[in-house]
Image (cartoon, rainbow, N blue to C red; front, side, top):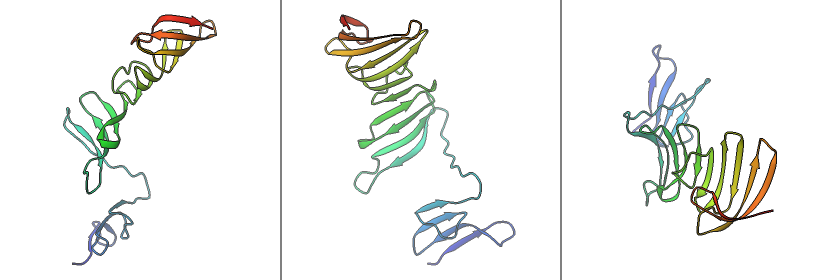
Length: 173
């Protein structure tokens, strides 16, 4: 088989090109460098649409594992999700712009990295910004920095924290 060209309405410029020898498709180019190449002088977007309650995205895999990761928009909750190794969710941006890395729950903080027992979260609530480093549940002794924007006070606390990050036993330095 040979190459296939689809031309614009005047018939002079190829807009869609199938390169049979490279088994590649070019949109806006007659020399695609990859399996699929989009080329334009202006902006280039690809639109992927789902139902109002479905997912729309891209999946990545290889010959032995067809889906190892993905980037997709979940229409049910309007979150953008990033899946990594074994197609497990690794990061989520919820509809409010909160970001979770390593967690898909408790995204009421602006940024949450890790789980409730090991990680980092930054939260702005009223006049207080709290930054937590390390574990913060009842089984983990951990350290935590608290910054109070109204007073400008920065304190380091060691102790044991509940699942909400509130101190059960605290030593303040």
